[in-house]
Length: 169
Image 1: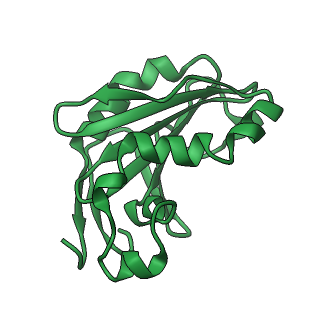
Image 2 (image 1 turned 45 degrees about the horizontal axis):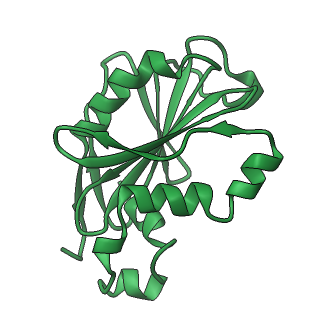
Image 3 (image 1 turned 90 degrees about the vertical axis):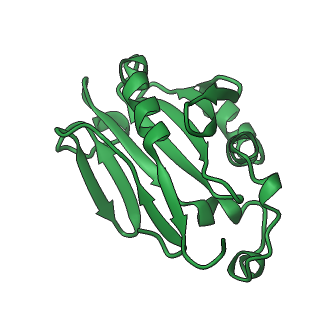
């Protein structure tokens, strides 16, 4: 589905997968609203491609030239760099409460997660190691106080991920 590879995963039959402007979303309802417009019972996942996650660590030239340091690109490193690097001050200034990133035990992959809480929604960032520096992130939004309701199914989805890179192996 992305410029540099193909992602597959399992999800509940009554959920909706949608692509919008190169982004892949998964939702448990037909409505795709975020922020103040979210309603109880609504959950939305935005998948972040490995090549985007790589850009925090490597130049586009190195990524396209297949000369990245894949060992440095881990789920914890992706979350720490993208969520707590330069963005941490903004989170604090906006009054966002958040947990420290932590490893997650999945059957098939190494992963890490971080939860964030605002007045409008709960958010989970779940980064999943697909090998070779390929980390798929799932940015999950739920109505305030409801993220725990979806945790088991989100871990199932994350554990079902497969990623086949195009080009670099």
